Image (cartoon, rainbow over all chains, first blue to last red; front, side, top):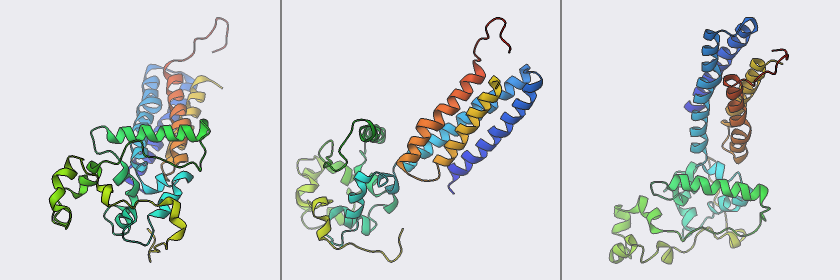
Amino acid sequence: MSLPTVSVIGLGLAAVAVILVVVIRAEAKLNRSTWTLGLLGFVGLPGLVLLLGFSHQMEQAGTTKFCLSCHEMQPYGVSLRIDESDHLPAAHFQNKRIPRDRACYSCHTTYTMFGGVNDKVRGARHVWKHFFAGRDGDAPLHLYDPFLNRECLHCHAGARSYEESFGHEDMLRDLADESVSCLDCHDTTHAIDTIEDHELWKPEVEE
Amino acid sequence: MNRIRLSALLTISGLAVVTVSLFRPHVYSFLLFLVAGVPAIVAGAVLFVFPPRQRKGQAP
């Protein structure tokens, strides 16, 4: 059990205890001290629970499990296990170039000041569309914007394996200013359409 | 049911829902938190802090 969950449980139990005391005392008379205690039990502690809970929900919203909890995303999760090294997401996932428990978010967040917030707003729109706008769950998905090198360079920039590798040396500047896309060469990504034609990697120990 | 008891019921239910929603990273957990947990806690707090006015002659 994670620390935020334990904290939420602890604060929640404290709030319940205070609320019960307030209810019992208010049966006799709701005087000023009981009302003040009530503020702690009904507003202060639950407010903290909400803040911590929201923060934890936001943290969880970046996990691979969370992304794959939508059925539209499940083929993308399967594509991470394609057993071929030229498949970019699969190679990153299987070789732990990104944390496996935050695989989607590591590449698909926007590494700008409000990128994370923007991603959450977009995610909320997806949920809204799924439930209320009658989106066809099997319709193909598209990125909102072209995938920028910035997201790749967030990790790869400065890495010797990137800067000194064959092919990269002569075009580092072009890659940095986005005039050439990483995906121009590394163009095999999730390959959703052909996923059934590929062998899938089965790790000995599932994470 | 009097105001304090209703307020307590809403807040405690909200706290329970928020706690349960934290155990599993899932879009339904997130929706449970947002659609049930937050409104219940907010409603409990509002009902406690701003009690509805009683009409003349109505039992407290």
